[in-house]
Every structure is written in C-alpha cells, then in structure tokens.
Image 1 (cartoon, rainbow, N blue to C red):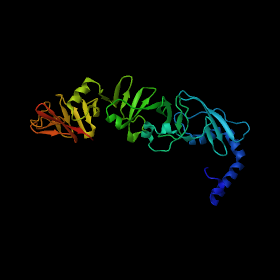
Image 2 (tube, helix red, strand yellow):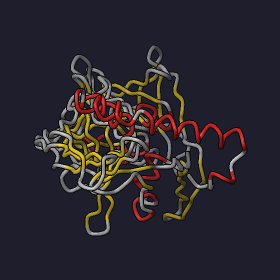
Image 3 (cartoon, rainbow, N blue to C red):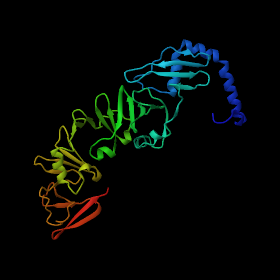
Image 4 (cartoon, one colour):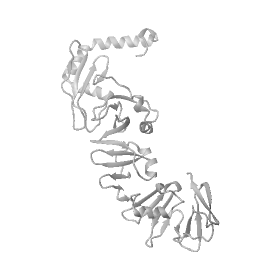
Length: 342
C-alpha cells in the first residue's frame, strides 16, 4: 500500500479496518484449514505465481517458520527442467516470497533489450526469480500457456519459454527476409527444431501452418513443403532470374509435396510455379516468364521481367518494381535500375 491508512477516504479506511479485523478473527480457521488441506494454499499461490499446466509444481510439507505463526514456508521441488525454490507465504496478508524475493519489475537492462521490446512492447512486466536452469527471472503471468523466462549471457539477453514439457529459446535466424521480419523464432532446446510463428500468432504453439527448421538436418518444412536452402545452387539460379527485380533475400523458394518448385515474391504479392518445361508461371498475372527476357525495347532497364500470356504467347508485357531510380553510363548505353523500396 502506497498511502497511509489515515490518508484514505473514510469509507475505504473503514473497509480496510473491517477486512483486517475479519482476517485476524479467522486466523485459527486459516491455520487449521491449511494444515488439513495444503493444496488450497498451493492453489492460492498459483494464482499469483502460475506454473505451466502440464507440469504443476509440487511442494514439500508446509511448516510455520520459527518466531512466527503467520509465515509458512515450503520448497517447490526440482524437476528435470527446473531447480528447487524456497517459498514463503504470509497467510493473513497474502505476501508471497520466492527465493526470499517478492514480485518485482523486470530490470531495465533486460526490459529495454531489443528482443524483449519486440516481444512485449511497452507492457509492464512483473517477475519472480526463475527456477529454470540458467535463467534469472520469470514473468508473473503466463502468455497463452507459455511461461516466459529471462537471463543474461555475456551482456546478451536470453528469452526462453516453457510450454507443454518443452523449453524454447527466442532466436534470430539467417533466413530469407520474409521469414525474418514477419515471424518470431523459437528454438526447441530439446529437439533442435526452430519454429517460425507469425507475429499475429506469437503464442500459438506448433501451429500446423508454421515453418519448422530442423537444425540438425539443416532442413525447413511446413506440413509437407520443403524450403529451398538460400545458399544452394538451385536458389542462386532462381535468384539470377529475378536479379535487379527483387533482391535474393526477399525470395522464398520452396518445394511442395505434390506440386512443382515454387517462388513467393511477398512484397509484390506474386506466386510463381515451374511448369514441365522449366518456365515460371505466375498465377496472379496468368502469364509466364519469357526465357530470353528480350522485350525488343527498354534494353538499358535491368529491373524488369518480360512476361507472355499463358494462352497467347504473342501477347507480351513488362513488369517493373516501384521505387527509386538509379542509372549509370555503360559504354555508349545507359543502365537503369529501379530499387524496390516497398
């Protein structure tokens, strides 16, 4: 309480006094009830200090500390993922101490880290000491069943989540830009799988449509679709087709289980699929990429893709990105590039 009782309005002060009187009057009842049903105390503690649903805490027998009949103490036992923690609870005033510390604010050195700001923004984060190995703090509330832990390693903030018997670590990955900027990445420290969660479904655990990167096998998949390695020869050949039209880090190339190799140009809302002749077809434009890329005009413009209609190959069109224009002299010609700023 930040105000002194005498500074409170008379009505609220009266309510506070009656509450204290009632609490003191039922002290004996509280003590006997807790002795007979310690699980009721543990449920009360879980409302302030929640645990994951799949692995609720277990406690050693509760006892009163010496020189006090108000404070009770126990130890939350260790598990394969966590260490034991000392727990104190004041049965009259409801104070909870974990490892002798009350709930408090997340320290600024962690709260202001880019990764924490990206996950939680300006939210007011309250924490207890963490039981997770190598972690220091744990959020006092769950996030869609995720218990969030924080730690520091060589001045770098580490964020981990316990959920459904697994421990995930928030990481940044070396992947195509659309799979970076539009997703959050969680590494399962047990299986070595990196899960890509859309920002709108940040706390949706293993959503069927999420990309999963199997670190050991160096393979990313979504359902039965495989992501093409951005460092592979296949990817580089495809990136060469779109050179100066879209940067390689913006391309998502994947191999569906029942369709041909496909490419997504997310900034332009274009999807392309390779046909039986090795030519890219664009579903949205109902056209295919001309292999020669000779439009008969605009020879100096490098940031263009020449298309021809799926039905009538004599009908051709040119698509160019929207952005700033760069140009330079090359021999007797002028080379022009349009930099996609979208």
